[in-house]
Amino acid sequence: MRLVTRAAWGARPSRYELAYIASTGGVKIHYEGTYVPKSLAAADAHATCAGRMRDLQASHLANRQEDYSDIAYNAVVCPHGYVYEGRGPHRKTGANGNSTLNSRDYAVCAMLGNSGLVVPPDAMLDGLVDAITWLRNKGAAGTRVAGHRDGFATACPGDRLYEWVQGGAVRPDGESPQGGTEGEAPGSGIARYQVTINGLRYGYGAKGAHVTAVGEALVDGGFGRHYKVGPGPEWTDADTLNYQEFQLAMGYTGTAPHEDADGVPGEVSLHQLLGKLPGKTTATTVPPFPGRSAFILGRTNPAVVTLDGGLIRKGFTRHHDGNGYQAGPRFTEYTRRNLAEFQRATPALAGDADGYAGPLTWRLLLS
Image (cartoon, helix red, strand yellow):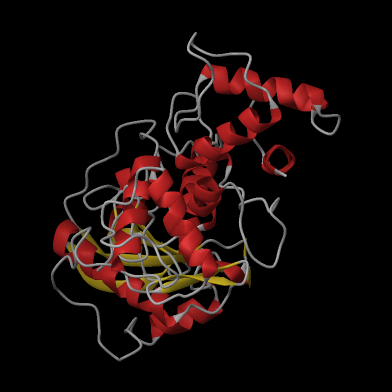
């Protein structure tokens, strides 16, 4: 099982104390029920899943009609098979439709939509079984596995996922949910997979001048201690270990394979390291918008470093603590004031210069 804890994906605190529940009869399976882009399931898109979790939590906390205490689900599973801790075991869900149903079963949501990504990848099905097993082992869930629509009038979890539930909720290899271990610990082993960013390959075995450029940037930044003879054009374990230390310094915490700080680049961290994204597109390529939940006053997020870099490059640094404005992972009042000045100076943004980054502010600042 590849578990991403609340701390690892950057969960906000619960609004109210979550209700304890000793056990349940089983687990209800859910889907997001909105458009989910097919690109989320791409092999190199896992770095965006933590941001999607933060956005899901933020949308639930903003729902004053339901008045959610937290993200409604006990767990959420991404297309790459990772289990994101939501409310977690022994916590009453808020997703099953009413208080009685919420007490009867835990809730596990798949990052699957009613359009776009509607067919669950095999890795997601594996992750759903992992989540069910986890809630049985850690939360005393019973053997029942049902869909949200079982007991409540809804289309959730969608026809494709509901077919899987009715078929026994088994892994692609036919194994049913059962007891087991928690799986690998963070940091166990070196990541040896590749990602493609702007047409260029990064990760173990990737080759090219762009690999050398990453190594040289790591050395220049003080992250070269694992090189024995210096960076070269083929990505080795030394590149992975050095890049991992750079990611950890940015504030990422997950270190298991495919997580944020496993030593394989994502677009945000690569842009921060090189100041651009090399490849088929131009040097002004903007990294993906990480979601509004990345910019919460007083909270830290690696994307704030990228935001700060844009402010510094464009000269919006008037507000600081007396030691000059410097890039850092915490979204401070100084960050907000400087960003508000950039917004006021940009005609397309001047009408809503609140100092908080949305997709348009992000694009215009970093382009």
